[in-house]
Image (cartoon, rainbow, N blue to C red; front, side):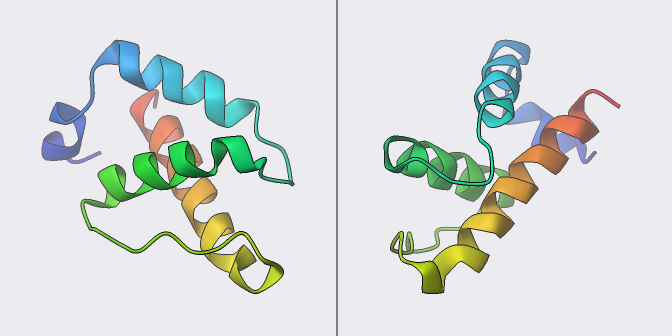
Length: 77
């Protein structure tokens, strides 16, 4: 993992991210959507407009969740 990316997060924050992302299954609850998108954009270090929660945007949400999961996995590797 890039050192710059590791410096953006604390151990405590990554622990909380892991706990939350592990609780997300195949369906994203609307109450977690903002959290997912905020963590995703912080990880990728880009401001992207948050997509709607309709079926057409599923790919965007899947990418966000998978990016967060990969980040957590890399952090603990």
